[in-house]
Image 1 (tube, rainbow, N blue to C red):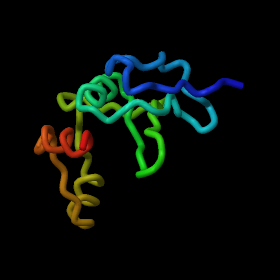
Image 2 (tube, one colour; image 1 turned 45 degrees about the vertical axis):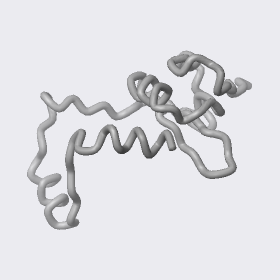
Image 3 (tube, rainbow, N blue to C red; image 1 turned 90 degrees about the vertical axis):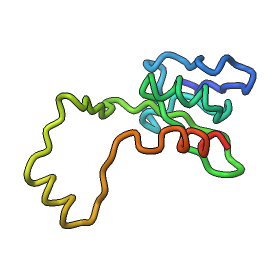
Image 4 (tube, rainbow, N blue to C red; image 1 turned 180 degrees about the horizontal axis):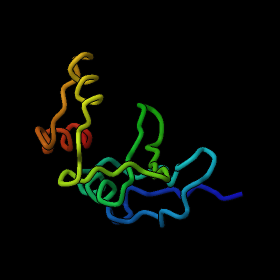
Length: 107
């Protein structure tokens, strides 16, 4: 049975365990602890890792496999997706408030 890696707020913000060490149960849980500094968040997102946080709980870092990665240059919006978005009132966008999101997550 594999144990979870605990991060310290004193660890370098770019340090995370190898993605291969993510647990299979719960699927994709890679690490716990650390902080939500903008440096750590950017380093995590660049590696396909994302945090899940609830007040009073440690930060959980996830790296599920497979992960969805969208390449904007290769993305094709099919008619069925366009219809779903139009009929459900979804709003899609890219990089509209990146700095505000990172700042809010780090707060």
